[in-house]
Length: 300
Image (cartoon, rainbow, N blue to C red; front, side, top):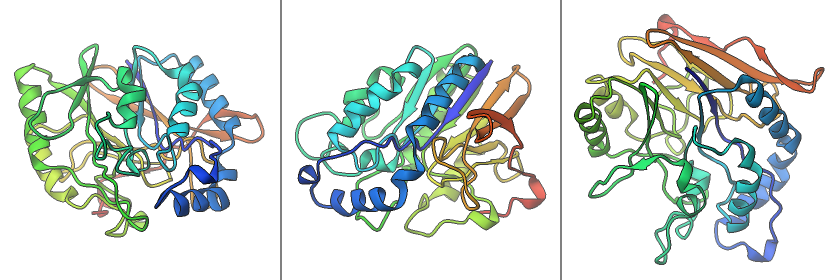
């Protein structure tokens, strides 16, 4: 089984300035003047070409399709994503996709924007009293989606997962006899020592969540949020791979090793390959995986 992991696509959609409200104004100005040129649509087109040649059994997108959760961003992003949307696609939202109360479904009667546009590719919604749990079964593997995001002030981008979500996830997997699963959540559960996050950017309770996951660990935890790639190998504290494919569509530089990952699972072993954009070839090509072994995994 082959699985492609993409994240933090941040599609370059131009917005009428007069349509922006509240925190969308500084957010869009920051994006326009600091990041927009780093996300040429040509990189996305190259990803589409590479994904087609890889012909994966599953395509996972771990959030941040948009920049400020504007309706027009969602409308345009759905059109841009069309080549990879299908039965094998599984998507979760990121913090930029829950940027405002109205986009997150906390204001007004409508569904959150992400669900309104991408519900067919978000998997089965597992009924919970209060919380987000999505499941998609592909072969003998379950893809499990969590939502760690919420609307915050413009200076914050932290995440949080209720412990009840972990308990509900493990109970569902047990009930359905799903032995192997991959967990997808936008915020990291681990960072390399040199890539630590501030309290205003990280998942607030990730060590508590990691402790609960020890009862029934996933094969891998896929995420984004920090815009550089890495792979952490299993270790005693977190006995699963932690894989970051952010930001798949960003131009690489000294601080941002961009690209995406391909996972190949033969029901006993997970093999991971990394692809980054080659300026010389104008395509995504296989490159060295940025990996961390047990002795290096003191990133909490």
